[in-house]
Length: 296
Image (cartoon, rainbow, N blue to C red; front, side, top):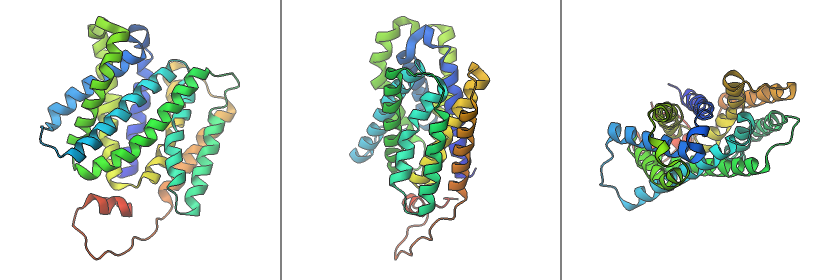
């Protein structure tokens, strides 16, 4: 699958999982949702990839940093979704990837697409009603963590050529979130109905999207990945409309169109030709990330 398709598949999975978690909030709360999501995802990923224990310290540090950012992102994002409409929470979360796309830009056209995406975010977030200030703060923190995760996950993808690095990162994030989930939900975390919902959320929001996006990060530079994920506010608003009944205003639909056009433009704008290098190892992930070409 082309790298943009991997990114979009991850975006859709994340937002579907976020919509499904609204049914779990009355049962275990946001922290309980995060704990179950990460723990189930960690068990599945470890079973599939069998990461083992022999890792150099540098790789362990990168995996721990990615897992920490994931845990804090999940905790803050679900606290935001508990207080804000899904589209608004995702719009604020987008500030992190948008900042990466903007500050890593090297071409005038990249700035154009980033600015168009920003205009779409502004329109999409215009709901005509006041939004919960605490929810906005949590969503902004989630955006900062997601932006940091993009950069750290890129390094993890360079160091580990398969899903073992992701398994380590998610496992570390699960350990960090466990005390918060137990404190909020206690034994309710083990209720059979809750575990079934949590398994679906883990597959939709963690296992499938992070595997797909980690593979995409091997092929795309962070700035392109950041602009592509600008579709998250649009997807979040549409998922909210279809599954939660959150209707969009005319201004919000205009924002959806603007963000979609920005993402399409970012993927279709031809990139700068890579500079020739004197040495190159065939199949080296860093070469593919540097030139923005596919590893296939």
